[in-house]
Length: 237
Image (cartoon, rainbow, N blue to C red; front, side, top):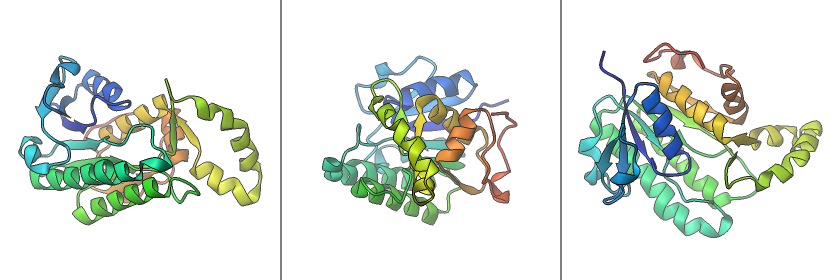
Protein backbone atom coordinates (compact mmCIF):
# COMPACT_ATOMS: atom_id res chain seq x y z
CA UNK A 1 0.00 0.00 0.00
CA UNK A 2 1.38 3.43 -0.98
CA UNK A 3 1.60 5.73 2.08
CA UNK A 4 -0.51 8.86 2.09
CA UNK A 5 1.68 11.84 1.26
CA UNK A 6 1.67 14.88 3.53
CA UNK A 7 3.26 18.18 2.52
CA UNK A 8 4.14 20.41 5.48
CA UNK A 9 5.19 24.05 5.56
CA UNK A 10 6.78 25.45 8.72
CA UNK A 11 8.23 21.99 9.36
CA UNK A 12 11.19 23.29 11.38
CA UNK A 13 9.05 25.51 13.61
CA UNK A 14 7.63 25.11 17.09
CA UNK A 15 4.77 22.80 16.11
CA UNK A 16 6.09 21.62 12.76
CA UNK A 17 9.27 19.92 13.94
CA UNK A 18 7.23 17.77 16.32
CA UNK A 19 4.40 17.12 13.90
CA UNK A 20 6.59 15.79 11.08
CA UNK A 21 8.10 13.23 13.46
CA UNK A 22 4.65 12.08 14.55
CA UNK A 23 3.43 11.87 10.95
CA UNK A 24 6.44 9.82 9.88
CA UNK A 25 5.97 7.46 12.83
CA UNK A 26 2.38 6.90 11.71
CA UNK A 27 3.55 5.77 8.30
CA UNK A 28 2.94 8.89 6.25
CA UNK A 29 5.32 9.92 3.49
CA UNK A 30 6.23 13.39 4.74
CA UNK A 31 7.47 16.14 2.43
CA UNK A 32 8.69 19.27 4.23
CA UNK A 33 9.14 22.67 2.59
CA UNK A 34 12.38 24.28 3.77
CA UNK A 35 14.59 27.15 2.75
CA UNK A 36 17.88 26.47 1.01
CA UNK A 37 20.43 25.37 3.59
CA UNK A 38 17.84 24.12 6.09
CA UNK A 39 17.31 20.58 4.79
CA UNK A 40 19.84 19.18 7.24
CA UNK A 41 17.55 20.24 10.11
CA UNK A 42 15.00 17.63 9.06
CA UNK A 43 14.98 14.04 10.33
CA UNK A 44 16.19 11.42 7.88
CA UNK A 45 12.71 9.95 7.37
CA UNK A 46 11.30 13.26 6.07
CA UNK A 47 11.78 14.35 2.44
CA UNK A 48 13.06 17.93 2.06
CA UNK A 49 11.49 20.22 -0.52
CA UNK A 50 13.59 23.34 -1.08
CA UNK A 51 11.54 26.43 -1.88
CA UNK A 52 10.32 29.82 -0.71
CA UNK A 53 6.98 29.61 1.07
CA UNK A 54 6.28 33.21 -0.01
CA UNK A 55 6.53 32.30 -3.70
CA UNK A 56 4.30 29.53 -5.02
CA UNK A 57 6.30 29.13 -8.21
CA UNK A 58 9.25 27.76 -6.26
CA UNK A 59 7.39 24.73 -4.96
CA UNK A 60 3.93 24.22 -6.45
CA UNK A 61 5.34 21.64 -8.87
CA UNK A 62 6.87 19.75 -5.93
CA UNK A 63 3.65 19.14 -4.00
CA UNK A 64 2.62 15.52 -4.68
CA UNK A 65 -0.77 15.16 -6.37
CA UNK A 66 -3.55 14.34 -3.88
CA UNK A 67 -1.26 15.15 -0.93
CA UNK A 68 -2.60 16.51 2.33
CA UNK A 69 -1.07 19.95 2.78
CA UNK A 70 -0.51 21.20 6.33
CA UNK A 71 0.31 24.91 6.49
CA UNK A 72 2.07 25.94 9.71
CA UNK A 73 4.05 29.02 8.70
CA UNK A 74 3.53 32.06 10.89
CA UNK A 75 5.24 34.84 12.77
CA UNK A 76 6.82 33.45 15.95
CA UNK A 77 5.51 34.76 19.28
CA UNK A 78 2.71 36.93 17.84
CA UNK A 79 2.10 40.29 19.50
CA UNK A 80 0.20 43.47 18.53
CA UNK A 81 3.42 45.19 17.42
CA UNK A 82 4.03 42.60 14.69
CA UNK A 83 1.19 43.63 12.37
CA UNK A 84 3.55 44.20 9.43
CA UNK A 85 5.03 40.73 9.84
CA UNK A 86 1.57 39.17 9.96
CA UNK A 87 0.80 40.78 6.63
CA UNK A 88 4.15 39.99 4.96
CA UNK A 89 4.62 36.45 6.28
CA UNK A 90 1.40 34.94 7.64
CA UNK A 91 -0.95 36.22 4.95
CA UNK A 92 1.38 35.96 1.96
CA UNK A 93 2.51 32.45 2.89
CA UNK A 94 -1.11 31.30 3.28
CA UNK A 95 -2.12 32.89 -0.02
CA UNK A 96 0.79 31.31 -1.89
CA UNK A 97 0.46 27.90 -0.27
CA UNK A 98 -3.28 27.68 -0.93
CA UNK A 99 -2.72 28.63 -4.57
CA UNK A 100 0.15 26.12 -4.88
CA UNK A 101 -1.96 23.34 -3.35
CA UNK A 102 -4.79 24.03 -5.75
CA UNK A 103 -2.46 23.99 -8.77
CA UNK A 104 -0.88 20.74 -7.57
CA UNK A 105 -4.22 19.02 -7.11
CA UNK A 106 -3.85 18.55 -3.35
CA UNK A 107 -6.44 16.33 -1.73
CA UNK A 108 -6.94 18.31 1.48
CA UNK A 109 -5.58 21.45 3.14
CA UNK A 110 -5.08 21.86 6.89
CA UNK A 111 -4.79 25.49 8.00
CA UNK A 112 -3.93 26.69 11.49
CA UNK A 113 -5.89 29.89 12.00
CA UNK A 114 -6.83 31.59 15.29
CA UNK A 115 -9.89 31.72 17.52
CA UNK A 116 -12.12 34.72 16.84
CA UNK A 117 -13.67 37.16 17.42
CA UNK A 118 -11.24 38.39 20.04
CA UNK A 119 -10.81 41.64 21.99
CA UNK A 120 -7.07 41.89 21.20
CA UNK A 121 -4.61 40.95 18.43
CA UNK A 122 -6.88 42.46 15.77
CA UNK A 123 -4.24 42.50 13.02
CA UNK A 124 -3.36 38.85 13.62
CA UNK A 125 -7.00 37.78 13.64
CA UNK A 126 -7.70 39.79 10.46
CA UNK A 127 -4.84 38.14 8.57
CA UNK A 128 -5.87 34.65 9.64
CA UNK A 129 -9.52 35.28 8.77
CA UNK A 130 -8.49 36.43 5.30
CA UNK A 131 -6.50 33.23 4.98
CA UNK A 132 -9.64 31.29 5.86
CA UNK A 133 -11.57 33.20 3.19
CA UNK A 134 -8.97 32.35 0.54
CA UNK A 135 -9.17 28.70 1.55
CA UNK A 136 -12.96 28.64 1.32
CA UNK A 137 -12.84 30.35 -2.08
CA UNK A 138 -10.23 27.89 -3.39
CA UNK A 139 -12.68 25.01 -3.35
CA UNK A 140 -10.08 22.75 -1.72
CA UNK A 141 -11.36 20.27 0.86
CA UNK A 142 -10.01 21.60 4.11
CA UNK A 143 -9.77 21.64 7.87
CA UNK A 144 -9.34 24.93 9.73
CA UNK A 145 -7.97 24.65 13.26
CA UNK A 146 -8.57 27.67 15.52
CA UNK A 147 -6.49 27.72 18.71
CA UNK A 148 -5.99 30.90 20.70
CA UNK A 149 -2.72 30.32 22.57
CA UNK A 150 -0.75 27.06 22.61
CA UNK A 151 0.93 26.24 25.91
CA UNK A 152 4.21 24.36 25.78
CA UNK A 153 7.97 24.63 26.31
CA UNK A 154 8.89 28.31 26.22
CA UNK A 155 5.21 29.28 26.03
CA UNK A 156 4.09 28.90 29.62
CA UNK A 157 3.35 32.39 30.96
CA UNK A 158 -0.41 32.14 30.16
CA UNK A 159 -0.69 29.43 32.82
CA UNK A 160 -0.96 32.43 35.16
CA UNK A 161 -4.27 33.27 33.49
CA UNK A 162 -5.91 29.89 34.13
CA UNK A 163 -7.66 31.03 37.37
CA UNK A 164 -9.12 33.96 35.42
CA UNK A 165 -10.37 31.61 32.72
CA UNK A 166 -12.09 29.51 35.37
CA UNK A 167 -13.78 32.62 36.73
CA UNK A 168 -14.81 33.92 33.29
CA UNK A 169 -16.33 30.52 32.49
CA UNK A 170 -18.67 30.88 35.48
CA UNK A 171 -19.98 34.31 34.44
CA UNK A 172 -22.74 34.20 31.79
CA UNK A 173 -21.56 37.34 29.99
CA UNK A 174 -18.00 36.03 29.54
CA UNK A 175 -18.60 32.27 29.37
CA UNK A 176 -18.68 31.96 25.57
CA UNK A 177 -15.55 34.05 25.15
CA UNK A 178 -13.67 32.03 27.77
CA UNK A 179 -14.49 28.84 25.92
CA UNK A 180 -13.73 30.20 22.46
CA UNK A 181 -10.47 31.86 23.52
CA UNK A 182 -9.35 29.16 25.92
CA UNK A 183 -5.80 27.89 26.18
CA UNK A 184 -4.75 24.61 24.58
CA UNK A 185 -1.58 22.60 25.09
CA UNK A 186 1.02 21.61 22.56
CA UNK A 187 0.11 17.89 22.85
CA UNK A 188 -3.55 18.78 22.23
CA UNK A 189 -2.61 20.73 19.11
CA UNK A 190 -0.38 17.94 17.81
CA UNK A 191 -3.07 15.36 18.35
CA UNK A 192 -5.61 17.60 16.62
CA UNK A 193 -3.39 18.07 13.58
CA UNK A 194 -2.75 14.33 13.40
CA UNK A 195 -6.49 13.77 13.62
CA UNK A 196 -7.07 16.29 10.83
CA UNK A 197 -4.63 14.42 8.60
CA UNK A 198 -5.92 10.98 9.56
CA UNK A 199 -9.51 11.94 8.78
CA UNK A 200 -8.90 14.24 5.81
CA UNK A 201 -11.87 13.85 3.50
CA UNK A 202 -13.67 15.79 0.81
CA UNK A 203 -15.53 18.24 3.01
CA UNK A 204 -14.74 21.43 4.90
CA UNK A 205 -14.69 21.76 8.67
CA UNK A 206 -13.60 24.09 11.46
CA UNK A 207 -12.11 22.88 14.73
CA UNK A 208 -12.50 25.31 17.61
CA UNK A 209 -10.84 25.34 21.05
CA UNK A 210 -13.39 23.04 22.78
CA UNK A 211 -12.89 20.40 20.11
CA UNK A 212 -9.11 20.76 20.16
CA UNK A 213 -9.36 19.85 23.82
CA UNK A 214 -11.71 16.94 23.11
CA UNK A 215 -9.43 15.50 20.46
CA UNK A 216 -6.51 15.97 22.83
CA UNK A 217 -8.35 13.75 25.32
CA UNK A 218 -8.93 11.07 22.70
CA UNK A 219 -12.54 12.07 21.97
CA UNK A 220 -14.23 12.95 18.71
CA UNK A 221 -15.15 16.59 18.04
CA UNK A 222 -18.80 17.41 18.59
CA UNK A 223 -19.54 19.64 15.59
CA UNK A 224 -18.63 17.55 12.55
CA UNK A 225 -20.94 18.00 9.58
CA UNK A 226 -21.96 15.08 7.39
CA UNK A 227 -19.53 16.12 4.66
CA UNK A 228 -16.61 15.67 7.08
CA UNK A 229 -17.21 11.99 7.68
CA UNK A 230 -15.50 10.60 4.59
CA UNK A 231 -11.95 9.64 5.55
CA UNK A 232 -8.75 8.61 3.83
CA UNK A 233 -7.95 5.99 6.43
CA UNK A 234 -9.71 4.42 9.39
CA UNK A 235 -8.42 5.82 12.65
CA UNK A 236 -9.16 6.22 16.30
CA UNK A 237 -8.25 9.41 18.06
